[in-house]
Length: 330
Image 1 (cartoon, rainbow, N blue to C red):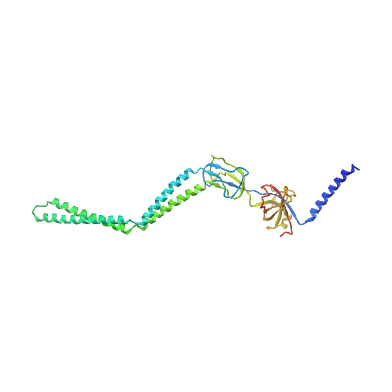
Image 2: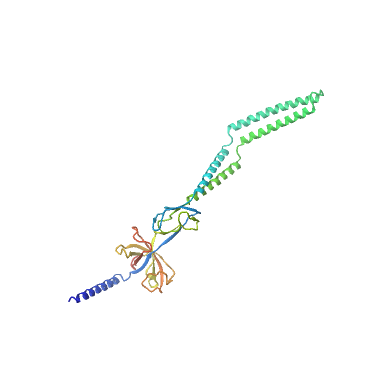
């Protein structure tokens, strides 16, 4: 009897296993069960400019979030250029304010005083010319020809000074020309644009994470020279999560985009996650590299993406999972 007991136990276990498998197959004859992995979307993160790396703050396996700064470039040269450009912008701004404000009242008063002095000098020079001219024409010999010529020159010079002072006063009263102000405005805009560019380049010296991700590879180290074509980190995006599975051509008519799915992992089979079909390939693949079905790899299959809702972050990138689809599920 004792020798028959182990045989009886094995027979009961086999019968129970067969019954469980049979019931699983009969429970939902329209269900479709597929196998796949949590897929990886990778980002090669690089600086937008060139320079020497001064700081790297993330390593492989770190979870990073959108907006995090995980690397920096040496920005001392750009910061000095920006400081000089800011001073130039301020100088251009003050020049424009001066042109728009026009001449000061003190400058106009000074110009009027200069004109009055020139007019007085011109009157005196004209009177001296008249006196010398009378003496020269009287025949008395009191004024020589040289004295007459000198008086004529002085009178002409005084008149020219009056004209010059009058023109200077008119120029001040007319104010700054519109063309001069427009040119100063254009110079200020150009200086401000150059300053904005320098500030943008300084901002780009900080390498920011574009979306929540996990660091897969750290490709550079502090001190390395990099360019926009030199990735610094390889990131695996954590959202959205989706499973890549393959469906036989015979089962293609049983699925459709938006169809609900249940996703479970081997490590937590009691915690299914909700999902839905987000993509069905329109092209059949013959012997894909990573077909994970129970059929032969020589079958024609279609790639399907199942989007997953994983609010508690149970699934990891690359983790194998099982996807169950029900033909009756809308």
